[in-house]
Image (cartoon, rainbow, N blue to C red):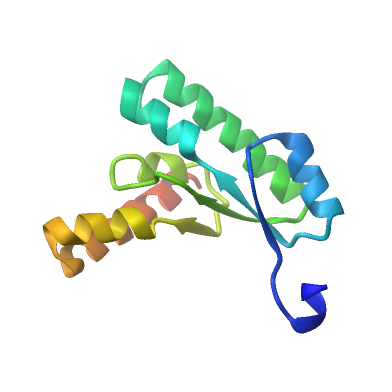
Length: 130
């Protein structure tokens, strides 16, 4: 097993409580929540829409359940400057996969400006989640 080699095990899953419990049972240390549905709802209906909020609540419940299972939490897929702060206001998220959006934004804005914007979005989201 990867643990014998000192490797952290993470499973990429949907925010389904039973899947999260099974991840712990399978020996995972972390999960990475697939955030595509949240990002799609936020893009289509707006961050403050009922649809986006319902997904946000689904992910919040998944994060709470994962913490109860003593799992670390990563999140990723289509998270970007538009939706990242709101998503991270859930709290307790250890890492986000934002590489694609970050590089796409850097091509337009420059790397230094983009990095600062993402750092600001992440710190604001973390503060909101406390």
